[in-house]
Amino acid sequence: MTSRFHAAALSVTLLMLSACAEEEGPSPAEKARMNEAAVAEVKAAQVPPPTPVTPDTIGFADVEQYDLFGAGCNFALADSGTPVALLQPERGYMKIDGKLVPFAPDAGSDVLPLGTRSRYTGAAWSLILDLSSAEGKQSGMETVDYPARFVLRNDRDQIVYQASGIAQCGS
Image 1 (tube, helix red, strand yellow):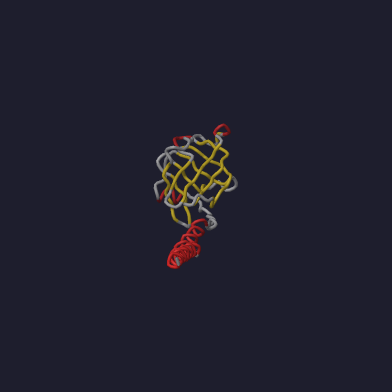
Image 2 (cartoon, rainbow, N blue to C red):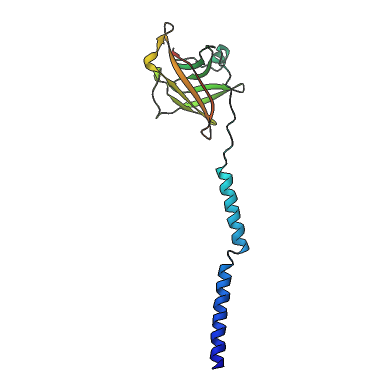
């Protein structure tokens, strides 16, 4: 009977030890993996604040140098009259940090006057031109001025520049 008792006691002891091992939690390697995953999750959730952009104006010398002639719309601050964005049906441009930056029209966006689009995308930025076509006023023989809002976003879809002004469309 003692051998049965010892066998039963041994079985109970082994069960208790295995239960204790399970209660101890994950192994050190598993803990390290879990910590790495938690740190990666926190880092992924952190989005740095946007770096503001101040676009340069696009002057007539730029239009000549880069052959930017053609029908389209430009966006300018109401008080300056000098464009910071030039949009055409096949391309768009801004001058940022002294360099001309090209943009491609978003074919799925709204069509604006003269075949321009409301959205354009570049390598590091995207832009939106929102104008009120019902409020356009003739400003020259071949130009119409529209009240407009302009937004430039970075590659994380954060606003880095926005302004209200005039969209002048013509040829």
